[in-house]
Image 1 (cartoon, rainbow, N blue to C red):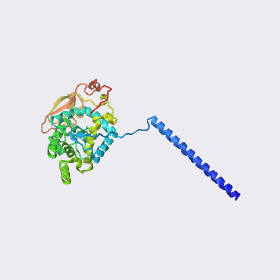
Image 2 (image 1 turned 120 degrees about the vertical axis):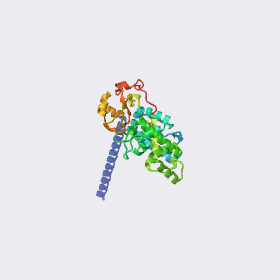
Image 3 (image 1 turned 30 degrees about the vertical axis):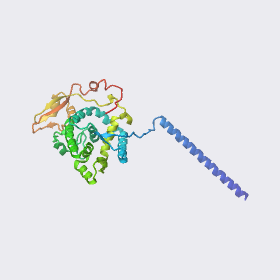
Image 4 (image 1 turned 180 degrees about the vertical axis):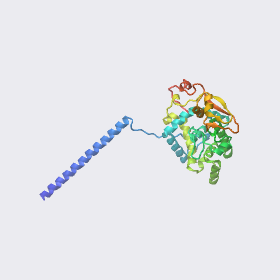
Length: 330
């Protein structure tokens, strides 16, 4: 009996030692982890993420967004988060906006199109002459047939969908037609994505009058909210963590113009005879898609060419561009 009691005492003691060891190891590990996290935070290895601010009210093209509807609010929240933390793309949009918004804005204004549609252009292409999987092309992402319908030349040699001025004029015509047909700029913007017929059919079938009330495919359901998110972030960049100086932005490139006409024109020779390179000719005129213009119809085109030293930043940047102040709005 005495031996049994001794064995019992020994077992209890061993258990106690094991428990104390585990407590010590756990405490040591906890301290070690806490110290490690403190050091990581101190050294900037841990990024603190804060939810981006959601506006209480916002409008598109002067039309109020129903922010009191929960799914509207949450849909905008999703796109603001996506475009805030997709900061590589969003920062590039802002850099490019400095070069291209001054071209787009006057054309929209001249045609009576609300300025907010420049953000539709950002959503469509990121302000590049992008090509979509469906073969839509340019800043405004025109399909070939639609572009031609609104006056853009699209051939094997010339693609005016890549001419920013011409394609913006065509986009204005298209948007006006959609607005007149559908009754609101918001619906016109949605139809720009999914087509007038598709939007009208869905609204009629569901017996609703507003884009925000209509159940649509995933892409179009997110489309207006993406435009709104880009507008909100680009108009209030510092609220979303974007600090860009004027010198960080892409400047407008000064140019001169020349006439391109005739048949079977070798564009390598044309560029050289006009004091530039073929690369620069194509860079400034992305609507040219070939190195030899057969031009069977004998059309005449105006091309942009760099001014003397026009491609050098030291010549392009102004004192304002070199300022260390941050840009507050795009």
